Image 1 (cartoon, rainbow, N blue to C red):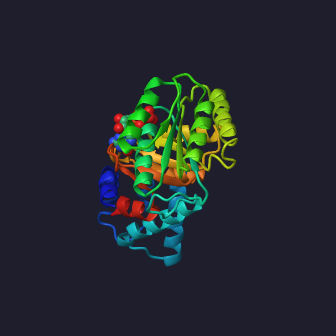
Image 2: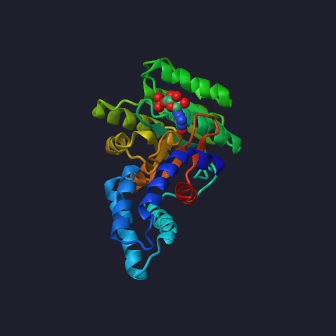
Image 3: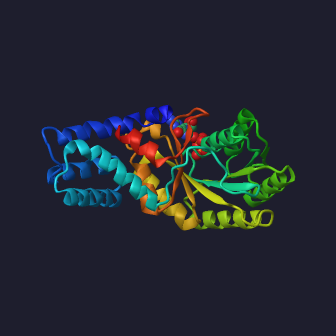
Amino acid sequence: KQSLDKGLEKTKTNFFTKLTKAVAGKSKVDEAVLDNLEEILVASDVGVATTLKIITRIEKRVAADKYLGVEELNGILQEEIAALLSESNTGDATEFVVPIATKPYVLMVVGVNGVGKTTTIGKLAYQFKKAGYNVVLGAADTFRAAAIDQLQIWADRVGVPIVRQEMGSDPASVAFDTLQSAVAQQADVVIIDTAGRLHNKINLMNELSKVKRVMQKVVAAAPHDVLLVLDGSTGQNAFEQAKQFTAATEVTALAVTKLDGTAKGGVVIGISDQFQIPVKYIGVGEGIEDLQVFNKYEFVDSFFK
Ligand code: GDP
């Protein structure tokens, strides 16, 4: 929670300063306050559609209560945003727990280069290992040599096995080998890195579906989750990437990184709502410990406190 507060400091300061200004000298939440709030939410990258949903929710509260004091606005915002996030099934977990009973749990990770995909995989491997799980990594981003090497560095750092082949080899083949190796050693968790190219959508789509198909020869239900990693500091780009990846493959979970580097952490709320996909993890720094299980209550608490 402490690192979450620190990670969201810029967002909070930005939001708070503006909100304080918006309600200065006011006693009740009126139309002018709501107009300002709308602007502030949009400026925090919540997105227009989600902002309007939030404002509508607040308006209903104002209408129901007849009078809403500005000092209540913060608490009500927290409640309504948490309620909204429930609709995208964004949860209230706090621990790194594998969501299925059978092993191995197969997590396929997608996202464009530079968003923090490798770092997130490394941090996840660390957390799952710390929680007592046996983890295996698969370097199926075979498009760039650096991607394989970077993942190797994380595997060594965390102390988990990695399955890799040469650069340029078939990603599906790497994924297949990884799952076979994981099954043979009765691993609990498999995390598969995949290539992050978006410029050729058909290729990406074909590649991801081939990786899935081939993995299913080893583990019928694989992948149990497809985690899309998005850079939270890129605002509208993150929305655009979510749009493209959800069109290319079935994304079941989101990780939003680099929230420590932005004043616009509201992107987490907007993306989860707009795509109706749960945010599972957030990145709040470059260190190995700086990945958190996303908890909407803790998040809104940090955001508005
Ligand atoms: P990839 O190309 O998507 O695999 O990206 P990398 O994992 O190599 O990360 C790109 C850069 O972003 C690296 O310098 C990471 O240290 C940095 N990074 C990743 N996640 C976070 C985060 O949550 N906060 C900050 N501040 N930096 C991050």
